[in-house]
Image (cartoon, rainbow, N blue to C red; front, side):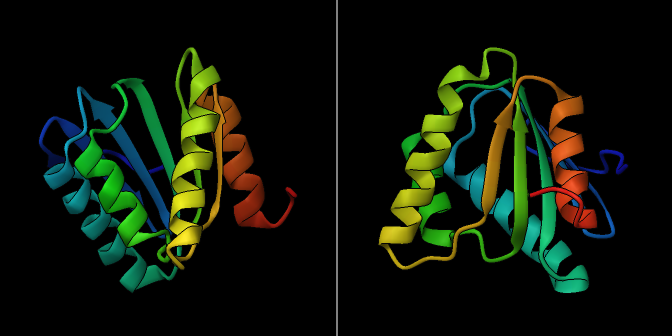
Length: 134
């Protein structure tokens, strides 16, 4: 698994091969989201589409600029994304909303899921990566 080697604002990022980990700390603003998406694109340029694991235990909803960047950018460099957060019950709706907005704008979307634990999220992503999960 990757170790965190990069920092954007308060957020930590790392990658190994085609696997990217992001740990959010505090609010996510537009300029940070743009830099995070550029980081993902740079990893994908080396490896192809990436699998993204997001630790969202210490963050809130992305601000409007960050959400706009997500829907504008789309998910072209992301094979799958798993987000985990205690009290994850409201995030499937946000994930669906962002994906629907991207789809309506004609942007690529990806497989995404929200989990309550890191173990569940890693298991799901690893299964997709290895072709053992539906």
